[in-house]
Length: 448
Image 1 (cartoon, rainbow, N blue to C red):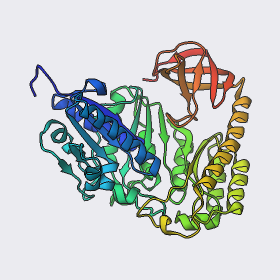
Image 2 (image 1 turned 90 degrees about the vertical axis):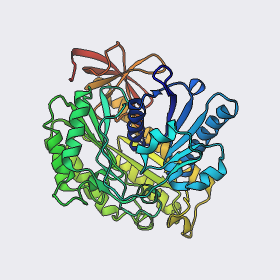
Image 3 (image 1 turned 45 degrees about the vertical axis):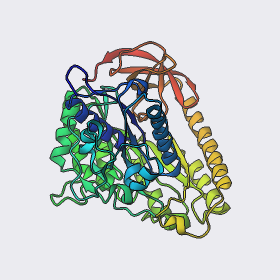
Image 4 (image 1 turned 135 degrees about the vertical axis):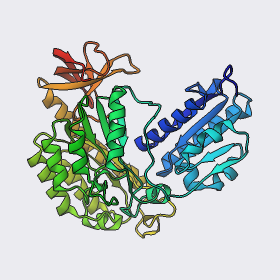
């Protein structure tokens, strides 16, 4: 590869924000090695696909992307196809046997091998190591998000042991970053233009449990709150079993920590929660929700549920629907249960028929839609601060208020264009489905 003709690399990043961080780190390594990253797939020399394999639909999406790349290779449009991330980590060499056109596979613990995988000629190139080291250093990323917002990974892996989950098998046990490293990365992201940091991990509230220096999430939130130039800190992927009073106090006390919490509950039936091995019951959940709303007035609560888990009958599903109607969450995601190979839940009796799972998901989503639409209607006439994200594919200027996380929640549609990365005071003038229509009412703050 010469300086006059750099290797052109197309990148397909699939899955969760944790995988996106890995993609950004791999892109940085490739750019430093002299590759031209970000080329369209049809104009690239190499296609790199960072995959997801958490549940069956994610696996199918990843395999579809791989097959599309292999078709381009078959037609002579690309020279090499590299598959990275959770899919090769989970399937191992069986992936190469199923899709023999793949040139290289790189697991989640070997992302530093991506340059050799992309630029080398070894075929097949295989790096599928296991967990053994600390959480990787994510500094120096080639960011794919807008400049004003970024994901900040606190830890890698999970030790919770939920019966339905493949994450420990794919990404290993919990490994927290030292707090000094998290703070250094945060400072780097802010210096690079980020005014919003979204804290992520498989279980953010377990942060520090494996460290010997006493670091914990509450202390980290208070340190991030002191970072000049940072406007919003958002906490994602909290776990009810490890959400502490100290973290709730930090949410209440820290002005830069937005009044928002992503708290996946997964179910409310004692029977189903026990089968899921979540480590808590209904009483714990209701006490946490009461404490959050009392200590952090106006907090936006997002959660997720799994429907159709083994043993979920009509009674358990009805209980879940009644709970959602009573709690009136700000945002809810609903997943149908998938019996993933290798998980304890896949071997449990009482498996629910796929058609029933889909039907229950639709019913719960319709219930939450009613709640969300009614909440949006009540917001008309109120004022909010909105972080402007830019122009969406429909050509509209869009942003988010503090109660809306990127990618997973609704948005604010601005009636007048505003520069991305700025924070503007707005009045809600209408709503469209899950989104709010807003009009700027005051001067802008660049938030930087």
